[in-house]
Image (cartoon, rainbow, N blue to C red; front, side, top):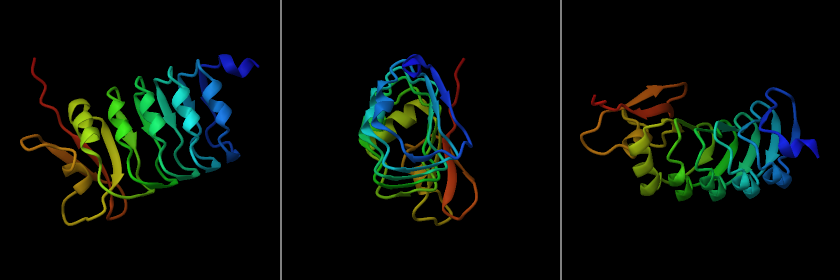
Amino acid sequence: GRLTSATVISLLDSDIQGKIPTEIGELSRLMNLELRNNVLSGPIPSHIGRLLNLRDQLDLSNNRLEGEIPSEIGQLTQLRGLKLAQNLLSGEVPEALSNLSRLTSIELDGNDLTGTIPNAVCKTFNDTAPAFEADCIDFDDRCPCCISCCVDGQDCSCRYLGTDKEFLCFQKRNLVS
């Protein structure tokens, strides 16, 4: 139908319920997908990795999505913003996110993610320095989620967001002219 030629879908605060259909992967021209602040549930379909033209952002935050972050999101190599915050996502951060070298912002906070951030993802984040929101598991006057993605000698900063485990972690770059 006509939706297959859509380049932007922005359905914010629309009280949409149910699962994200696997047919989402057929929207091959889509450049921006915003479904924030709805009542979406179930897993993020792996077919979302077929949206190879997605470059602005994938915003599925503030829903009731559950399960693991599909590694297929790592195929969205043009993506600049990944927002999956405030859901019921579990499991570990997939190593495939290391392919997202154009990210300027990634939000994973407010989920039930476990484990550490894979080294390959940290390497990419160190190179690209996106704003990175995450929950810090072992808060002790430091922000482990930030420290785990910053190598020695680089200036990393964490900004307290709300709870004692929720921080915005980002790396400050020294720009040379």
